[in-house]
Length: 378
Image 1 (spheres, rainbow, N blue to C red):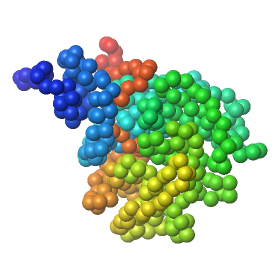
Image 2: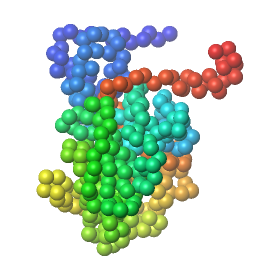
Image 3: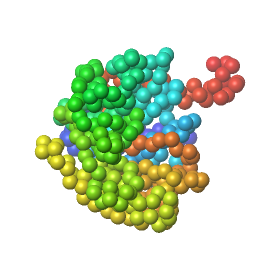
Image 4: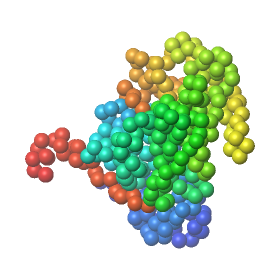
């Protein structure tokens, strides 16, 4: 019988050196270290170490994962091993919608007892927090389009949720309801942005400090709406001129940590040419500049696809199994999961917010329920 490996305390190493070493370890190992020694616990729980670990893991493509929803089975998939489907101990038993993910936190929306609730969840540390939306009054939302977003404001180290209420009649008015994890409260902000309609009920892309939607301008043309968390304001961005003149189909994505568009002329045409457009924003001057970052060719058609942080693309080429496609190496990996309703970028982290509590072991409950003998005597 194999003996379990013991975790030995190393008192001679300086805390900063130990922190650099520990920052290379996965969260599961760090949680074990926290339980083994008070010194380790204090180090791993410190804000500077959590930030160091998060930055190191998010910058390494080998640590990138995908959170996939299929409608029945939701799984975490490591991009370096897409055939391995990782089971999750989910905080919500009912159906939920994924709003987005950043720095290891996943934002979900679900309905409980006829009321809408928001759930912030870190699967890596198996903790979550749930709170109701700001206002669930049907009269307030009856004449408007409602969309939700999630984001991170670096300056105040604040994870925030936004509910955008765009009214359909009268003066084009947008009301913003913003929840802050630091204050643990909602606030309401009126926005006289010329934005009139967000295309989806949840945001399209999240990058640090900014959250993006594909939207319709007042004249019906497609634009991008970027919400700047530091100033709590929407920034309306026109599409690249080439995308408009060629009438290209496009999808918004997080490309190597920056916002980008994947644009192509025909989603069904084989050997399509796909352009990658990146944007440079000057928030203070309210100016933007599009640059074509890359162009690549494919030998397959799209029925649906999603862009990922590391530059990979998940392609659903119906009726075949969805696969992961690397833009640089042109390699493909079958994912072993079908169909896909939605997916989000995910990187494990130690990030914890005020009010977090432990997720009950749903996996164990499911195993008991599926075993009639165990269920009878439990």
